[in-house]
Length: 295
Ligand code: NDP
Image (cartoon, rainbow, N blue to C red; front, side, top):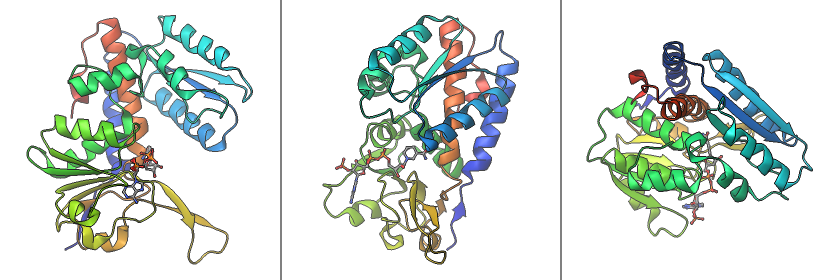
């Protein structure tokens, strides 16, 4: 068997195209505000890409750069000002924040209606209760790719490997919303390979390079690999490369479909952030939500 490759890069590009179309048909221009604290190189690259795609899809981008030694109260002040700025539809605080800042406190300051990362307690509560709200981006992208590969997910056994607040838990709620039978596995799970062997859909979000072995997979399973791990290159001394949480190459012979790393779930995260910005603008401003953004 040779698995079909789920091309997240292409799917994300298509989604950004649909977002552009949706934005051009709206009565106004949605605005995404990004707050970047400090000089972390990876965060700077993420923010640069977020701004680039925000503008490319026809939206307005506002950036707030704060020095690494900024006080927590000053960050909170910026977030509060963005909450009350009627022009701003979505607020994204780039994580991780420098160690002296309490991330939870800062995130909780974001108004839930502008919480385009879906990380506030209110957004998590709305997701758990099945109420309308903004859903976390990476888990949403994972569902989109699984649906793209399999169509209707009703009744599928879905194993989520990982129970983090950022990925595992919201992914479990989102696959449940798709009528999957969801199992959440974690570091204390017994007989992990057997649990994974029952999965029609495996969402691996564990942060351990190539941990999931090909022989653990149910033949034909849909594998959504969220993991992004940088490891030393075996042939190029001093160089590194990216791998997922699943041992990709051998899994091609077992899985029915699989996301590559890079080029799978990764590109979906920003595309879903842009989608959330449009949805947030529509909800807050009372515009009709575009019908080309559902999945
Ligand atoms: P966390 O470290 O917060 O969570 C990892 C989870 O994996 C925990 O629930 C942990 O269990 C579980 N785990 C750890 N070791 C094992 C093990 N040996 N067996 C079973 N379960 C285990 O990671 P995140 O959820 O934030 O991220 C997961 C991965 O996804 C990372 O590689 C990250 O880089 C990537 N990521 C990718 C994104 C993207 O855009 N594509 C966005 C966000 C993350 P326990 O709770 O018991 O400790």
